[in-house]
Length: 370
Image 1 (cartoon, rainbow, N blue to C red):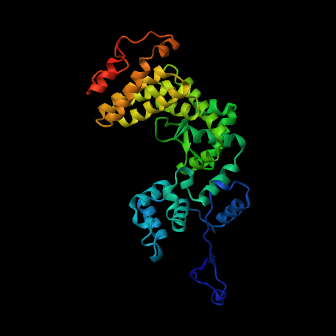
Image 2 (cartoon, rainbow, N blue to C red; image 1 turned 45 degrees about the vertical axis):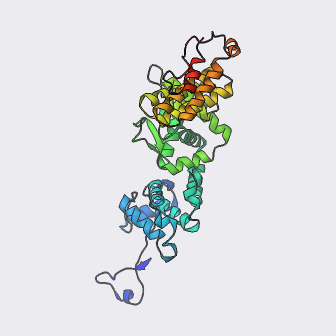
Image 3 (cartoon, helix red, strand yellow; image 1 turned 180 degrees about the horizontal axis):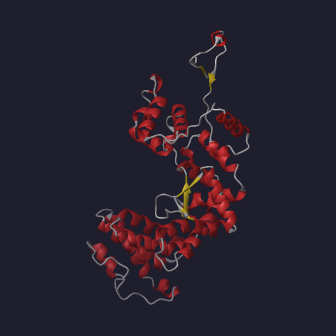
């Protein structure tokens, strides 16, 4: 609040100290509805030419960087990790997305505990005041909108409305109202990028919102949503290409090892075919872990040989690959294992590494042949 410049022709009262005032205020327009006292007051002032409104967009990258530097600046913080670590600074700018409130919250958190936020992950990396603000905004929504936000948080970056309809289980009109309300308060937005981008897909207006919403979910609720999302994706992909990586992720996080295994193996095969050796190893290792827990040694042996082949192609981990082959060979040469599964013993090195490069590996391969 500050004194305004005397207008032309101002009378004596201006000189005696009766000064006009200019008031600058900020508010979140998504929280002010028609009929609220603030909305009524602003409309009355605007009608009299006494008020003007300016919408504030997120800051441009260079503007956000300057604001963060100003917030973190000062002699007391010149040597802090927040000022000297370029990766940390870039991470804060990326997570804040140009939103001034987010930048202020991150800066305050870094000044208070410089090592806490960088070491955290997910919602734990979000300052507490920002988390509290998101929780408050979510709590103000009707139940259907809150359930929809939870489904979007677990689904990933973007999700189609048809999938949400299956998972949330609300009547079409109620789901549409929930989506519209979540978009009105700018918690959700129509997706503009990603494989599900389009007028019928949704994502969070800011990644931090989704992280806070997901962090509030209990383990059972989260697993149930993963299970429902995977089943919905399978239904809606009928006749088309299955998103095997996404299905592997959701069934794994739902605790559905039996249903996750085929997608994990197929995801590993696809990554291997694309030359993404690290990704293929990750999928194969997770598939082996599931198969071991399910008590399916022969299937695990087959995936172990695939993993060994990937490790050989990557040119590293030879000893680990050899150990995988020997373990698979030990499984494949146990007649009792084959009889338990109702399968004949192997008559070739199908489950082994055909291009073995050492005597031990060759012996492991030959041990499967009758």
